[in-house]
View (tube, rainbow, N blue to C red):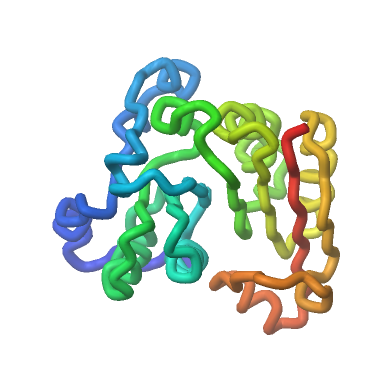
Length: 223
């Protein structure tokens, strides 16, 4: 069910410049858009030299805001293309008084024109849409076209952390990570019944685990 459009959404988005960057090339084919230079100065954006972490598909902001609160010495950039959802995340960050989180509105295809090469410590893919139909396979965030983008912006030996409730998507992701030269570790087929520590539960994760569904998790590291 689609979320009802938030009241005064445009005005609220326009008033969120302290937290929000809006991608300017969503109307372009991403192959052309990546040639545009809108690279963000992270030191200027966050006001410090701390390491930068990236969440793609940040939803209502539960993960990003919790990460920022738990790690005041780290910065996190949260990417979400749904403005109606993103405004809730921004409201949460502002209510919590967080200084080390920023949001970017746009699609992951355009990240290379905004994020400097080898500048990201870790990437988080939390409950990305699995796009189960084969004709939509290129939209999966672990499709090789996205993995090649992550390779560009991750620091050497950078890590991608993926969580999902979808077994078939998880199996697909394992195959793609392996074929694209990532080394897999900390693979869990039932995260909440494992000995993994430090997990931040997202909105979807709480929903799915409450239904008794297993949560799948992996880490993919650049060799």
